[in-house]
Length: 271
Ligand SMILES: Nc1nc(=O)c2c([nH]1)NC[C@@H]1CN(c3ccc(C(=O)N[C@@H](CCC(=O)O)C(=O)O)cc3)CN21
Ligand SMILES: CC(C)C(=O)C(=O)O
Ligand SMILES: [Mg+2]
Image (cartoon, rainbow, N blue to C red; front, side, top):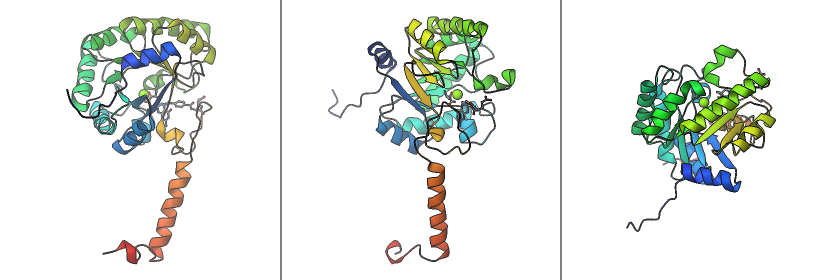
């Protein structure tokens, strides 16, 4: 028995228990080591290495261009910073839609090369076979329904999903398919709060909402959005906890001023 202080890692089992006792699951995205250390220390239950890295890290307009190799690089950095949080990694567009073997290979690469604890895939019944195959290999899978940004060109907009009955019925079928395939949780993005409540109550596994109301078992936001780094991005579902854009800009301008004025470095800041 090791005498080292044990760090109790959040597991999928703990997340199920949280749903059962009504404790909400707090999840945020993370893409790099420094932010992961802060968020892990703050007590986040789950860190998501989101393919939103394509937008907020790389500056792409959509999540489509980011590659599996790039996701693994972000995941490795986050895993090094997370001692307690459960780390989930998005399988990027093009790394799992082909067939279930491709999906399994991509999931295995993420687990083997990054040390993350689970993967997330967008889609419903059409990916259930892939989900099942990944879970059979021992890899925890999180689902993602509602607004699925990897299929943005099928819809053309980022508007709220499953507002009409047909789409809501499809989501209900899809989420059951994901639960039956063995997903440990499902992200619900931009769907009516009433629908999210209904499916959350009907499921055994936790739902994690983003723009899906207060009745989900947990919430997720993109870290850059909630600390106010993504200037001009203020959808209704977003709560901004700081304005880091202005904070960093002010700091940078103070630095410029000090450098130009030969105020920095001073006597104490040199050798
Ligand atoms: N920075 C960032 N935050 C995110 O939440 C995020 C990403 N990037 N990239 C990947 C996806 C895309 N997501 C999005 C993108 C747009 C809206 C959105 O609601 N946009 C506008 C317009 C919606 C409309 O056309 O009605 C809004 O103001 O609501 C929501 C989620 C969520 N993900
Ligand atoms: C918005 C969350 C759920 C996500 O998938 C991402 O950040 O990529
Ligand atoms: Mg994503």
